[in-house]
Every structure is written in structure tokens, then in C-alpha cells.
Image (tube, rainbow over all chains, first blue to last red; front, side):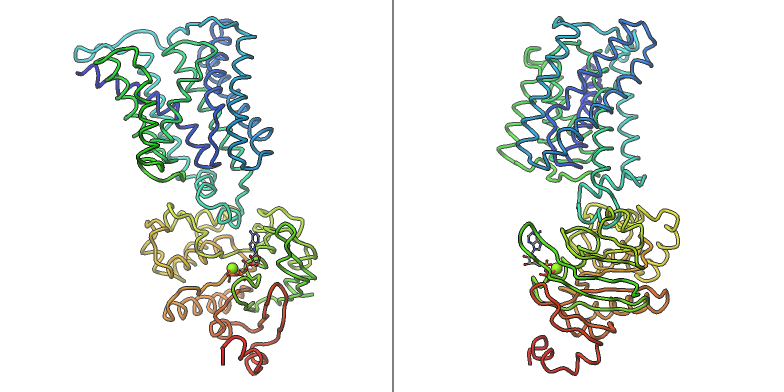
Length: 284
Length: 234
Ligand SMILES: Nc1ncnc2c1ncn2[C@@H]1O[C@H](COP(=O)(O)OP(=O)(O)OP(=O)(O)O)[C@@H](O)[C@H]1O
Ligand SMILES: [Mg+2]
């Protein structure tokens, strides 16, 4: 019981970190970036290369991964999303294709065998009869810190409020002197960086492989669809619903069910409540 | 040279022409009103000043052409635009709406915030409330307040009284007049409500299907039977 509770909490924290960059883009730009999980994969592989191939310190690996994620996000916006000017289907198709292309690139550079990342923080922790790896505990704590920081940033800084403004009313934001294009670029950069960081933790929790983008993408899509929201608190709530559902189903029913309930939940919510459980897409 | 010069302005939505060769001069410190029915092109005219439409012709503020400037620069030059009320940020608090208004005028936040709250004490009472849950009149105050947060030298106001009770219109008129008198702010409003427009504006421009049909001082036009027939319906 305690085990389920703790595992659920930790996994949910990781899921929230995975999803938040995706929901950010969705609410500010109204774009479902299906290449989002490529940031996770690229982040994971860059970390692997810097830390385990080049032997540099872990923190360097993380910083490089995050910077590359930012760059990738901004490039994607400038080169692909902006020229498509809000044509949603075109954006979704081209981001999905890009994800497959990036997968091919990863296979080319690193071959297609799975790689194991060393734990970011090795060791285990025993609490009330449950065992927790310090690795996932770190991931969760970092996730909470980042979500807290992002919440503060979005609400308390000029740029953050401008991001909310663009997500709620583009004309209103423009007449306040907010350049929506620049805000979008910044948002894509933040999203890419968050994705890459989430990728490092996700890969250290599972493993690195060229198809590792599928699971996080499903998680992120599930958070947007189930929540229907760009709210950071909402992301956290839905991440917990999904995280706990997965822990409960895999420990109590069968480990093979990992991910299945998440997908069923997506379909169920689409049928019952297409606007999501919270019915709002704007950032806040 | 007038403070604001709108010179042979035409505006387009794709191929459709929404404004034809508009000429309007506004002197510093004046209040002028553009009156016209639904679809006459009032919002298009104000949008054009912010470079939100495709235009031909020229718009100059103190002899500086605005037509090729990026929008954020136009706001930075001192053009504040109180848009129609549905362009607020509905899930943000009143205060946060105002703070977004200060995006290009960060050094004057404190002054402007106290000016707005002095003008509209109701907004201070409700500063934590989400703007989407406000009444129409309160939303109008937020729209005006948000534009004032940009530290404007020229304030554009799109149909401030639409859908508001007479009582609230009086308050809005008082606020605009007070701004004009106390700070010398130049104001351009659009209206369908001719009574409201004549009450505060010194000059009137009558817009019909994208053209200025008539213009003059408020006194001249209110003694003009044609106008009275067209807009007062008598
Ligand atoms: N985004 C747009 N795309 C195409 N046509 C538009 C657009 N916005 C306005 N128009 C057209 O331009 C003309 C002028 O519209 P505008 O909104 O400026 O009128 P208005 O005087 O503000 O009307 P209202 O009192 O209803 O607000 C109308 O014929 C309208 O259909
Ligand atoms: Mg209008």
C-alpha cells in the first residue's frame, strides 16, 4: 500500500515534468507538437554522450541537453511551425514526421540498441517498508521545483504574463505591445529545454532507445486531452491521475498493462467530455 | 501639423476594402469621435492605427509615420488602444490584465496603476477577480485601464458604451473627460451612441461603409438635420 502510494507520487512527478512542456506549447500556440517527445529523446542521448561517452560531469550533461532542447524547440518553431501559420493539421503531420526523422537520425548516430543510463543519483531509500530509488526521487524533486518555478515565472514576470495573455487573446496581447511571435519563440525554447530535461530523467528511469519518444508522447497527449488545460496546477493533477492509474494497474493487475489504461483514458475522455475534464486551454 | 494625421488611409481584408481614403487630423489634447453603424469600419480604423490591418496611405503621430513600424513599437510610441471588451484576458485577474498593459511601459507601472485605480475605484476593489467574471461596465473599465497602463499620449477607445446601462455610460464619459482635462490626453473614440459621442467629443466624423461622409465640430453637426435624421432616427 505504502509502496503504491510512494511509487505513484514519484512517477506522477516525473509525468508532470514530461507533460508540462507540451501543455505549454499547446496553450500558448494552440499547437499539438507531436515532435515534442523528440526533445526528450535528444536530451537523453545528449546526456548519454556527454556523460557516459565523454566522461564529463553529470551536471554538464544536463546543461548541454537542456540548451540543445531549447535550441531545437526554437528552430522547430521558426523553420516549421511559423511558416505553416496555424494550419493545425499541417503542423501535426509535419511534427509527427519530424519525430520519425529524428528517430532515424538517432539510429544513425547511436545505432538502434537500447542503452542504459547510470542513475543520476545512485542508491536506494527505505521508508515504511517501501523501497525508493534515489534516482526517481531526484527526478520527482526536480520536477516539483521546476513546476513551482514555472508557475512563478508564468504568473509573476512580464514575459510569463505575456505568455498567458497570448494564450487568452492574441489581439488583446498585441495592443499591449506584446510581440506574439517573440513570445511563441520563447515558449518553444522553454518547452524544448523542459522536454530535454524530462528526457534525461525519463531515460534514467527506463532506458535510452530510438523509439523511447512514444510513451512520453502518449503521457503528454493524455494530460492535454484529459485536462484540456494549459494550467500548470491542472497538469500536476492530471499527471497524478495518470501516474497512480499506471502504478495501480501494473502492480495489482499485470506489469504488461503499462500505458494501456492511459490510452483507454484518452479515448474515454474524448468520447465523454471532448473539452477535457477541466474544459479550458488557456495558460495560467 | 496635427498631432495625429490620418492621410488617405484605405484598409483591406484580403481583397475586400473596408476603408476608403480616410483623412482625419487630430490636434493634441482634443477628443474626437468617429460615429457609424455596425460594419461601418470603426474598429478597422482604430486597428489600422496599430498596424493590425493591411493598409494604403499614411498615419503619422507627431510627424512620425506609424505604418511601417512593428506593433509593439507603435504601442511604445504612445498609442494606447482600449479594444472591445471581449479582447481582455478572461482567466487573468484584473490587476494582471493591467500589468500586461504595462508590458512596454515598465518604469511607470506604479504611477499608472494608481491613476487607473483613482479613476476606477471599483477595479481596485476587484483587483483579484478574474476579468472574465466581471460585469460589462467593469470590463470596459479594465479595457480602458489596460490601455492607460501603456502610458499613452494618444488613447484609442472602441465603442466604450456598447451594451452598457446609461448610468455606467455617464461614469465612462466622466472618466474620459477627466483624463482629457487633467492629463491633456488626446482621445479618439468610436461610437454608435451619438448622444454619448456628442457629449464628450469636440469633433465628429461620420463613417459609412468605410468612407467619411461628414465631419465637423460637434456644434455644427448637431445642428445639421441630415445627421439628426440619420442617427437620431427622427
Ligand atoms: N477580420 C475580418 N475579415 C474580413 N472582413 C472583416 C474583418 N473584420 C471586419 N471586416 C469587415 O470590414 C467591415 C468593417 O468592419 P468593422 O468591424 O471595422 O466595423 P465596425 O464599424 O467596427 O462595426 P461594429 O459596430 O459592428 O463593431 C465590415 O464589412 C466587416 O465585415
Ligand atoms: Mg467594431
